[in-house]
Image (cartoon, rainbow, N blue to C red; front, side):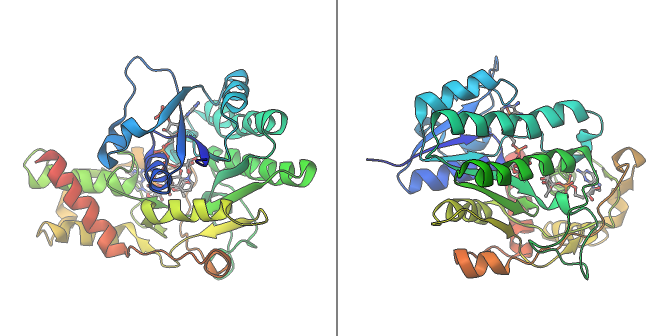
Length: 323
Ligand code: NAP
Ligand code: F7E
């Protein structure tokens, strides 16, 4: 019998990489998608897995649809990747962000509790929950949380609800605290992809500049393909636990710009960048850098793709796509 997994957020970056990984491991993959007149399968198409997934229709805001899906599929594993995941928009759409990212998770956990209590559950938690709180600038599983955006607050609710369902009902609930991870199918509004897409446009004569906000921020950027392996490993453990997943190295947006522009032979990248206050946030996270020793030790997980390789991969993919 094939193992079965339900992925929410399957049309997003991580959903697509995780679906590919699970299909390679011979899982039957169910993908929850919202109702659209024209759904966008481009990420799954990019990885060549669109036709191998069984789609189920539902919405994180619709409790009954989640109950129905869990009852019908009773999957061995549930990966909850669905979210309003863009921090910048979460100030403008705080209620929606909370409904999807917080209450949606409560609905899904209840559906599992009532209709499939043996399903193992993965919650997509985030380094954003730490805010600027860290000891010596490096975060671990023990670092206190201090969320600084409606997105981070909504995720912290879901994080603790996941812990609470484990402690209250004995369900196999895990939470992966993942740091930023990127790829050629990263959403276009996130800073890395905005830059690589912008560079491809500049190189091809389709644009003259890239408008950015705070380019002093530092992030611990890894490759999404590596990070979905950690998600899967978390659900293969005997006991549920939470893990921090990161590369352990941070870089500034300026570093990213230098390497990315360098890839297309442009050294004086500053002349293509315009600082635009519209892209600055009401509250910023200045530095994120995670220590994932626990994941190395207990899961045997380590990131494979290095920062430079990731940046070049993204630039090359955007040049190819637009060219
Ligand atoms: P993403 O590309 O933005 O994908 C999110 C997915 O959630 C989209 O496919 C979206 O569906 C779906 N979704 C949104 N609202 C929904 C709703 N009401 N009902 C059902 N589905 C809904 O995000 P990602 O980068 O793959 O990240 C995956 C998860 O990890 C997210 O929960 C994110 O918050 C979390 N996370 C990401 C990172 C990172 O660096 N990437 C780091 C830490 C945590 P549509 O396609 O229909 O819009
Ligand atoms: O911003 C700065 C911005 O939007 C990174 C999500 O996956 O990772 C992601 O959240 C930094 C911030 O990612 C622009 O102010 C400057 O300091 O790429 P981002 P994020 O906010 O770190 C975490 C772990 C998640 O959980 C989230 O779901 O870049 N920045 N100028 C800009 N950011 C954007 N988007 N656009 C700019 O023009």
